[in-house]
Length: 249
Image (cartoon, rainbow, N blue to C red; front, side):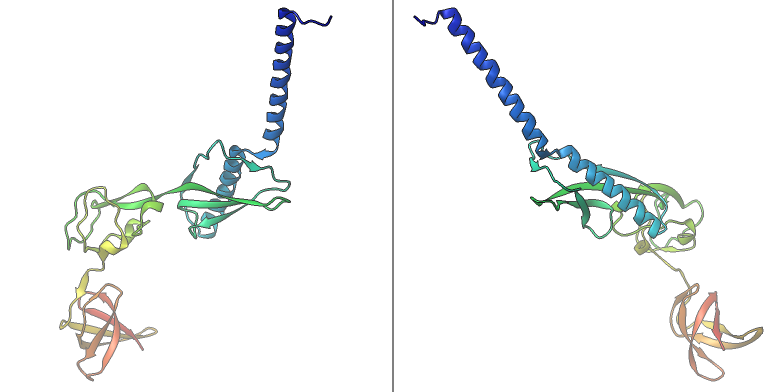
């Protein structure tokens, strides 16, 4: 007789269980070899952004340091293994700063596309207020300083040099440590409409001065309309100082 004892039945069941487990492990290994791991997608995105940001900084002649953070992908993501090198391109925005989306694509026999989110922080020295500044304040040394900020978050822009802020008039009140944006300042008016001015007409080394009247307000180096009081002609002149304008002959 070929009767199985309880011990032999237990042994056979155990062997079947071990065989099934080995099959599953082998199947899992094969499946793992057939997918593109999320870590690979993150690596491709990281490398692409590093190259793209470096190129942007070099092309735009921008100084600063950057940080790249690629978002974690769902570990359950199962994209087929690609039989060609993955390609990447910037999907949005136009420049690689702030929140970005990278399009990673497989151009192989079974093509697929995935969009990977990331963030790029670009840190630069920008002008900030060292104290609260009221409206109409003319910015002087000590009112502003350079501090490092993530310029990708500065939607209204920024000033990279103190010279761009000194002597400017504040048009919007600012608080201490606030980044000064171009829209918050303007040239102070050194000439107002109706002021009597001296018009200097230059031609090489020759300079002729004549009396004039300002027909509009103007700050340093701005063009304003003035009337020549001798000839009554109206001309455009550049503001060179209080009550001083200049035209080219």
